[in-house]
Length: 117
Image (cartoon, rainbow, N blue to C red; front, side, top):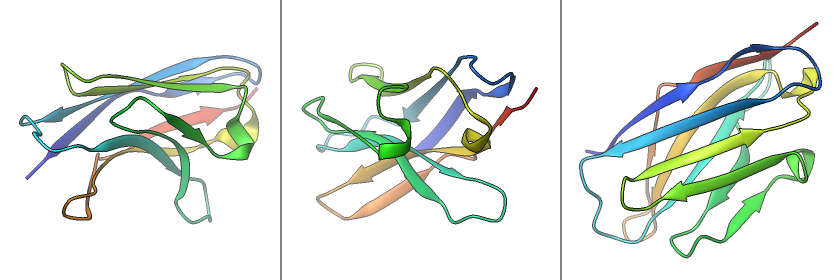
């Protein structure tokens, strides 16, 4: 069973920045994707950004040019750098690890990001 632990989040003013990080354990030996989803108040969980085993990132349109995803494969970590945050970015952010070989998804516990003046 893969465990994901998230760090970061908090409260920031509009236009500010926050960084999220997530670490997976134990060692995953298959190819996998890691990424971030979010669930805003009264909304369904949605993809924010994901990065493949070959370091190819994908972003939802709402965060392109503002957010950047990266990973450290040796440490099984994924990072999300969020710039120019907006009120609509307020949500619980969940780290995700997807194993294509089994189609399993693993989730972190979630971390709150609040953008408010």
